Image (cartoon, rainbow, N blue to C red; front, side, top):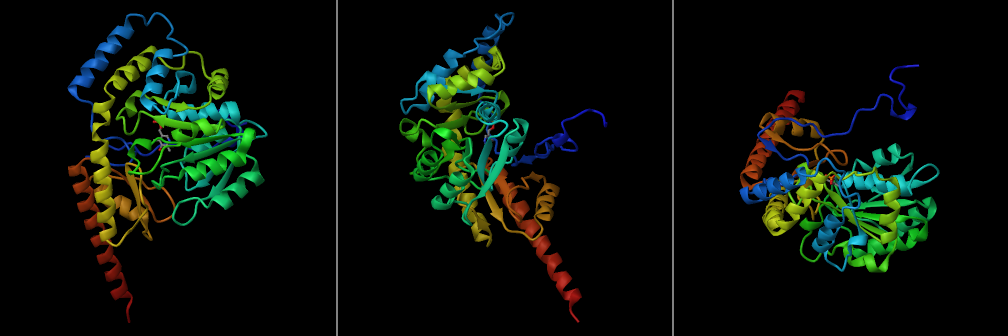
Length: 372
Ligand SMILES: *Cc1c(COP(=O)(O)O)cnc(C)c1O
């Protein structure tokens, strides 16, 4: 027996995570590049100080005040009983799989999809089933329905806008899948990037009254510029929220987390104030990449996927050598860049142009040498 006596299926695996490198321009994990203002810092600090006065006690296990504030933020008639939260939407997702997945059950997503999902399936002993998106990274609804009817998954995971492609799904896709799954399962629309949607792309929140098996997941990590606080949440039928309460750890949301999230929500307009700017910067980045002759997936998120390169690692490395960290993720040959500030995007464009010029020069030198 090798030590430590790990579960068989976990042996030799590396923990998930993008490289956390100390480089000047970090465009690799879809963070909001704007830190909180002094006013927000002061208000959060006061709220934490207040919460500290009662840290001898366990926090409100049902975090009613926070659920109420999140429901208010979501709108669409969502009530506090329809809201659940945890330490990042990644924990929300794991809890969903603990409650609705498990041995003898399966979770389904359509690739390319968020790379964490299969890990939560594994950790909760849920079988992982992967369908496929089309060449434009959208879903063919007949094919998607057929996969559901054949596989009968207990949980369908649909990031929209999708990570790593940025693709948002139309409401019909959600409806088709909710109907195909029926009462045998739940459909989780992961709207981590929901606030970055382009004009005219609706949120799945609008469909909640029509499908009791629909879960819409959100996070404060991206548009809300609060990745460090770890707060994710969902809106769903109250029966689904109740079911999660069975598997959650007691007091999983610390009093400090609750206080920080509540204070941040009071500043929602300010924290979200840069979203429009980031959407514009995204659209400019997409256009610029296309002008360079590259393929770029249409994006409703705060990043874009571009390519394709015969050796994407060399391009990723070329950018890193120039102080710009992006992400090597997605289908073969593609790279993903998060949208940063205007100066950061200028640095990215320059680094990419230089890297591509250097690669072209090398390729041409190679061809010439190879010629008789
Ligand atoms: C970033 C991201 C999340 C958010 O994760 P948190 O745990 O809330 O920080 C969720 N889903 C997808 C697809 C993401 O890309």
